[in-house]
Every structure is written in structure tokens, then in C-alpha cells.
Image (tube, rainbow over all chains, first blue to last red):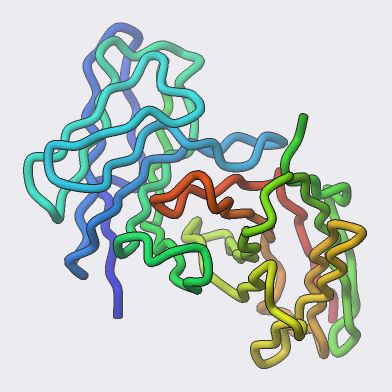
Length: 117
Length: 116
């Protein structure tokens, strides 16, 4: 079974703090993703990575950065947390894209609910 | 413009009845894939079913089936014989061929409540 774990289920931080959200997968997947989920907006892609030390911006990268030093670990960093970053953050992983006909799916972690005060 | 539209913020169904959750999509790419995920209150997204744009038949997985109408650009999820455990958020998502890396675009979700 694929396992994607996230370091915290709930996190409370103060405005201006540097925040690290960690994600680890145990299936040797090449691709990893960070999303944020807000009511009425669905899931929006922040950043993704298709290999170690590689990263690509998603749809809403502003205010975030990422790090992927090891294949199994993908970190999301909020350099200076702000109240509008209060959200649910979901990490996902998948094998390398095998083309559009592939039925491969993304596997998600349990999420981290971050509150910035 | 929204690439994935789920027009039903909430749906109610009685146990053992069937329910259809709507999803329409917008793409000019002939090659794409459509996914449905379930998110229970625990938060984890669970993959339910996949439909490829070139698939000739509608996808089915147990009690889940996908009513794929390509000309109308709709990919509705049908849950037969609803169970109390089906109460959750449901998200439709699309993977486009030109994106690569299995990048998905999600709809805003539908909350399903199954009553006894």
C-alpha cells in the first residue's frame, strides 16, 4: 500500500513565522505535489517536483517555496506566514508520468490544517 | 475560465438509493483523463475511478460508475446503493496531456450526505 505521511495534522503559527510542512512517501515515486484546499475553491496546486532537487511552480506559488533533497521527502516552506495562508495543505505523490493513457493516480497524505494567527 | 465545474455544492440521498454527482470540464486537448476522488472527514483524498478521453466504454469500479458524455464534456459520477459511509466530499479532476507530470486540475467539490 502506498503511504504518504505529513508531519502534522494540525499546526498553529503566528504571523511572520517561518513554517515547514513535511511530506514523506514510501513508494519510490518520482513526482510529488503540494496543494492547498479552501472551501469553495477546491484543491489548488502550489508546487510540484518530478525529481530530486527539481521543482516547478503550480498555480499559486506566491508566498511559498519548496525543497526536495531526497526522493521520498518534499517540504513546503512558508517563509513568513500570513493569515491568508490559513488553509488545509495536502501532499501527494505519483509515479513518473507514463503518458496520457496511463491510469496512474496521485496518492494523497492526510493533510495538515494550518492556522496562522 | 473554470476547467472543471461541479455545480452541486451539496447533495442529499437516502441510504440504498443511487445518486449522481455532476462534473463538466473544459479542454481543447483531445487527450485527457478524468478522475473522481472522495474526501471523508478525516481529510485524506481517496481515488475512486478514472476515465480516459479515448476510452470507448464508461468506467466502472464496484458501486461507482462514470457517465462519460464526451460531446457534452461531462463526466458524472454515479454511486449506486448509497451507504452511510459514502457521506464525504467528492472532487472531480482532469489531467491534460500537454501538462505532463500528471498535473491535475480539481473542481470545487460536492458534499454528499447519506441519510438512514
